[in-house]
Image: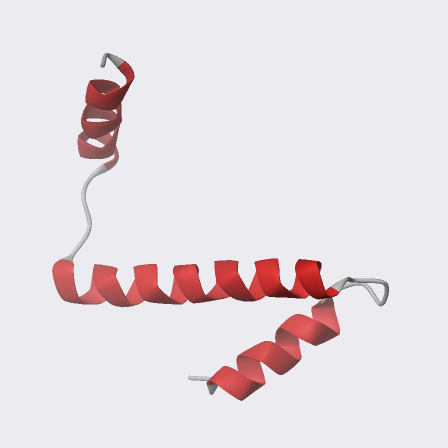
Length: 62
């Protein structure tokens, strides 16, 4: 498992050289959200595709 510093270094290596601070911040934000989601899935589990479809369909009908 990589450290946060290693993840950021890898992210920066993969971004285009002309990336703005805003681009970098956005990618860091997404990276953190994915990391938190993976951790939550480990501790709380996940739902099936059908369960996700059912939950989302309830939002669309409101």
